[in-house]
Image (cartoon, rainbow, N blue to C red; front, side, top):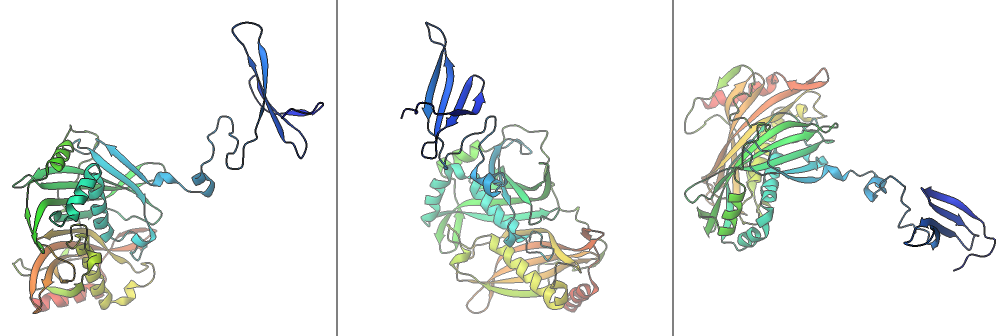
Amino acid sequence: MVPEPGLELAVERQAGDTVLFRGGAAELDLRVLTFPLRLTRGPERIVALIVQAPTAAEPAAVEGAEPPSVADKYGFDPSVHALLISHDSPNGEPAVTLRFPLTFRECANLSRTLYFSHYSIWLGKLRELVIQPVYSELAREFASGRWGMVTNYSETRILDAARADGVIEGRIWLDEVSGQFGSTQDLHYEWKRVLPDGRRERIAWSKMQATWVEILSHGVVEARPLPDYYQQYVESMKVVGSDPRAEPLPATVDEIDLGAELFRVPPGPVNRALLAERVFGTALEDANLVGNIYFANYTLWTGRTRDHFFHDVAPEYYRGVGEQGELRCLYHRIDHLREAMPFERIAVRMSLEALHERGVRLRCDYFRVTPDDGREKLAHGQHVVGWFALTDGSWALAPLPEVFRAAVLARAEGAA
């Protein structure tokens, strides 16, 4: 296409000696790009090119600025999702960090803060994330029905609440390898919230132990050596040198202060201060790739048993958004003894260990319900909860309401 004689062009954009002209009529939208060119011989020349206007799908770039992304156009922030690999764990082991936003489903406390059982769900998610380099091989092994990993125990200490508008960073690293075949792995986790200014605050820490097993029959497993490819990967994830900047995880939960102890159940093999028992049915939805009942279900059952007990005592405290206060989990741990399988019924017995001024320490025992209504123990655990109330705009531990205190004491003293 050749411009018509006498066609007027106007400067549309200029960068140094390069000039873009535009002109034409309604039926001819013309752009001419001109720039100087010096060849090996002869004087400097001016080159003029007719260029095509950018289409709607390819907007013209603005000099000195990145073109807006589709995410920017619609107000999304992709940075709230991230996968990071580093050597900044307390002992210098390779650590995997997953950044993600909280969802509505996870903020189920009355105060619309994070409900404790979701930490257990995240434990499993990060445990599978850290094995990403060998995930395909492991998935084939587990899907065969012959091999698996079983959880020996998991625990979480919750230091502060997380809210629905928060962004969480969960970090996992391999701490120790032990056991008869070196197939037991101790995993450590820490959970931080990302503040608007980019700083991080620790809100919880977790630990988990898992063992590689051979599946001998339905629900029966035994520890075995790791396969070679997985052994090599585990070796690569061991300590590479300490990082003095890393904040160590606490070794105990003794710092939990629930105030004065008002009552303690005498120690013994059987806790007779039973507060509640609930039976839960299981199905395929409760299982996983290995085929057994997924470990996080035990935490879900704990929360339901606890909530139903205290709700039945005083349902008026379970309305609204926590104006009268709420129970929050500060620590929970579950030790697994044997495997549960889909379509079994699981009984959860919640007993009192100690009553305090501002909360309770509970014991939970988990049983398989046999066809003759007997009980076969599967696991046992601890569950520490504090009563939180809103005072002067902030949540803090407060005295446990008398209605709950009296109900717990009545059950405990009646069983003594």
